Structure formats: C-alpha cells, structure tokens
Image (tube, rainbow, N blue to C red; front, side):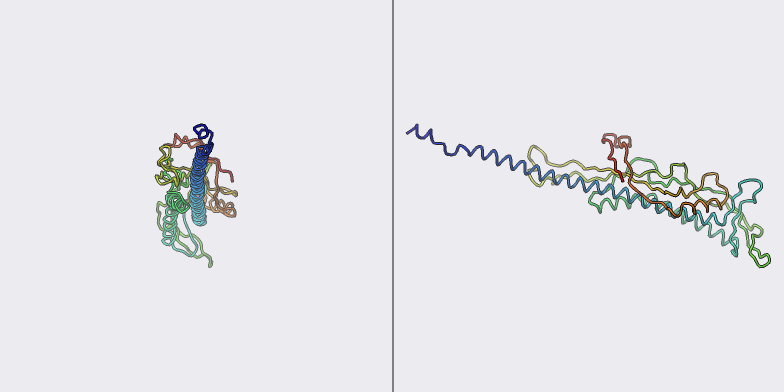
Length: 290
C-alpha cells in the first residue's frame, strides 16, 4: 500500500506550473512598467524639442522686428563717418525736429521691449510649452545670456533737423536741438545668436509603477531628463550692420538684403552637456538632426 502511494505521480507538475506562472507574471510586470517608463521618456524628449524650438522661434521673431526698426532708423538718420560727411543728424521730410525726436525715442522703447520678448519671454514660453507637452517644465541652466539676442546698440549725439521748403520741395533745415539717443543695433560678434538648450524634466514619482511597486525594494522612479537645442538662422544674411557702420543707408540696405529670407529657427546638435554648469554628471547630450 505504501509502495502504491509512492508511485502516485499526481501533483508533480504543480511546482513547475507555479514557477512558470510566477515568471510570466514578473515578465508581464516588467513589460508594463518598462512601457510606461519608455512612454514618459518619449513625452519628455518631445517636450524638450518643442521647448527649444519655441524659444528659438521667439528669438527669431524678435530679430526680425529689431531689424525692421533698424531699417526705419537708418532711413532718416545720418551718422558722421568721416570729416567729409555732414555732421550726424536726423531728418524726416515735412516733419519738424521735435516729431522726429519723438519717433526716435518711441522706436528705442519698442526695440527694448522686443529684446525682452526675445530674451526672458522666450524662456517663459518655452517652459509653458514643455508643460503643455507633458513634462513638468524645463530646467534653468547656468549659461550666461543663453537667451540673449547678442545685440548691442550704438548711442550717439544726434542733431535733429527741421524742414524747410526750397522751390516747393522739402529740405533739411538748420538743426533745432541735439540729443544723445540710441540708434541701430548690431551683433556683438560674427557668430550671431547662440543656440538655446532646453532640458525638460519629469519629477520623480512614487506612484509610477502600476504593478509590483514594492517588488525588489523599488518604491519610486528617478527623475526623467531629456535635452534639445535650437537656434535662429537667416540664409540671406545677418540683417544687422557691423559695429563701425556710420551711415544710416547702409543699415537700411543691410535689412533689405536679408529681409527676404528672414530669421527662422531649427533644431541643432546639443553637443556635450557635461560642460554645462550644474550638469557635469549627465552623459553626452543627444544629437538632434533636422
């Protein structure tokens, strides 16, 4: 009777079935959790791309607007460049000197607003776009003037001329007064605006794992980061004069030369972000080719 019980093979496959089921369940949990992590990684990368592109677009718009205001100033301001040329002055036909001065000051104020639009405002909109794209925002990098347009203004003393009529035609009259005002902007260096880098992030989550949260001691997922870079470009030229440009018509011609192309924005390779202050522990940045 004992021998018959020992020879009974019923239930021998049960331990193996339990091990197989446990393995399948663990594999299923791994697939589900990895799928969620990969999905979030793709979302954060898309958010970084959108944020970098948004900032570059705002900077490109600002450059286009500043270039247009430069052209307006160059159309009526004469800037002394040599001893043969007339002294620096500003004159608009049929307008008195005071109205010309007010127009110049108004263009100066608008240009300062535009520079902020292409600077800090570009960062704020990039952060907003990153959040709308699924990330928790973009990190503020310790890169000096990364969102700057890299522009500097010439500030000189200008004589504002009145208008006189000569045989029925307007002509510049004697200067009424002299004021020190801002004129046109120029690039600080030949390279133009730098690329802006956006590092989008998704905060560490304790409720990340839908299955097996406490398995193997894993209770939360670390922070997810993704990086992208973009910069403005203009295929027709810089649109801005050189530092030593003295004649307003040269500023106008510089804008006419590049206005047909206009400043646009595109993604560029990020490079080695381990050199960025505060991010030395991160690996080499992702190269985005567009």
